[in-house]
Image 1: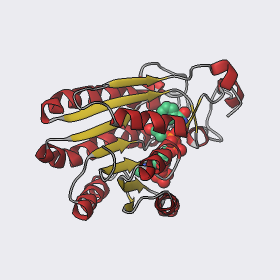
Image 2: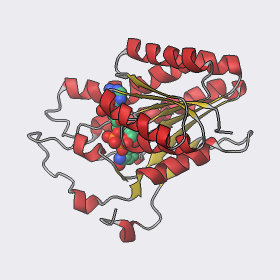
Image 3: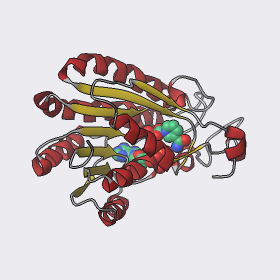
Length: 253
Ligand SMILES: NC(=O)c1ccc[n+]([C@@H]2O[C@H](COP(=O)([O-])OP(=O)(O)OC[C@H]3O[C@@H](n4cnc5c(N)ncnc54)[C@H](OP(=O)(O)O)[C@@H]3O)[C@@H](O)[C@H]2O)c1
């Protein structure tokens, strides 16, 4: 099912997006990798080729820019002639309390996580509808179901991703396009380094040791592959991914 399919992965320069790209590379999927850091994308592109992928594009794309997204999707289509899979993994949090949170930071988080997801989905839909097939997985978060102190913008974006995903899924299910949200718990990636910012007031900052890491990027990627390999008529519409034994795994990853 995955061999020779064409997958676009946002946030492919790091973390969950990178791990997903490398696992799909091993299955022979043709890949279009999107992120802002060209050097990191090229590193993942080289690794994907080492793992057996023959066709891997690395496209610099800032998801906050409509033109970047439109160009990235049309270059992928031009190169491969089809688009079977879209994984929206790009995302970030900029932590801070609402009292004092800048509009610029709010917009960065919402534009990347929510509007970026809208833009990529909108851009692939004409192709998937024409094909009468396709799969889209939007990565939300446990923070898409629960508020978290100092993460109001992030939670708003991830709650939004779930509402957007559910609505889109109903619009296109009869076009044989499966749209789903994945809600992972805490994953050991660069994510928390981006979220934690020096000099931003946090009255009660969550300590990394207290949170602990629960999942690895590779484990999340394996679940993404399982979602992509469902029986044709099955549709896992929302997958909540929790660690089985948090106490054992805490601080061991
Ligand atoms: N880690 C966790 O604990 C956790 C838990 C639940 C959900 N998630 C979600 O999982 C997804 C992946 O996160 P991760 O943990 O893999 O974090 P990560 O390692 O920091 O990766 C984030 C990715 O997003 C890309 N990105 C950020 N802003 C972008 C923009 N404007 N345009 C294009 N790409 C952009 C980054 O690439 P560039 O910097 O090169 O652009 C990077 O590839 C995110 O949506 C996150 O919210 C993470």
